[in-house]
Image (cartoon, rainbow, N blue to C red):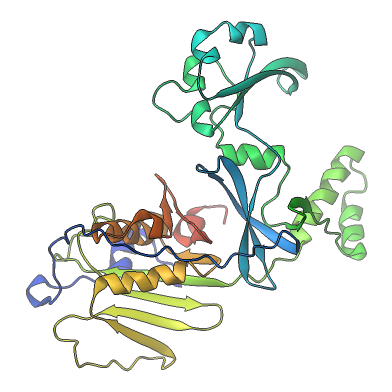
Length: 372
């Protein structure tokens, strides 16, 4: 995938079509409720997994638990492991348990589970302090709702604005990208030991450092030397019809049809899905290189269904500006065409586009990081 400067983004992402020569419909489709069968995810159901890599974490609002996506290299599939340790969302307060119980709005909050007294280490004061741990049924009880969230009831809280899944992996000391195993439903880390010569050479560089510092060197060596699994992945890019040359279609409105989608995966499969216009009926295109398979579709709905099949299968999807355009446009276009949300394999946030099955990496956002 070619990386283009930001100022060339319009030119790169969108091949505009002259309105006078277009054979595509430009009117918005009416919403038609489609009864699509929700795809059956090919997830490993076994409670015992010898080795898998933690690649993502999130929160399931229906089950009210955090979960991990574990990639199993041997099967090239993702296993969803749901927390079974009764971990719950919480925030901290410097008020005592008694003081908090005297606050009516907090005490009577339907999402409150309990209040505990805990000891925490205050780095600024360099000492242990007593805090109250306010435990809730779900993350929105802590914060996120416009009203009645606990962090809105109390004037001062700690750890109330951390996303719950981030809090979860910190508390459980889980490290994304590292290997884990599951036995009888219990998740545990697989301790990776670097080659002795590598560890010895690195430690020799820091031989005069304090003992506490050397412990961190060993820890970071394990993280950086741990082998990276070969994750089955696919790159995706879409082309959208634009009635005007100087206007990029709005991905939140998604009023114009998706006219082409290209895929290439790590096995070398190269596909281009093309929406036919009136002049394409009897045309066949010879591609260069010849190993690219061009597939024609008479109906945009069928083209989008094929995109969804791919998104339900691959563990890792790569895009370039997919957070703000490709996946966002596909999601809203599918909505406009009457797809049910349960059948759309994309989850939209305000800044990111996630996947229900695999994980999505936006290379534009990745390379925009100056440290990369």
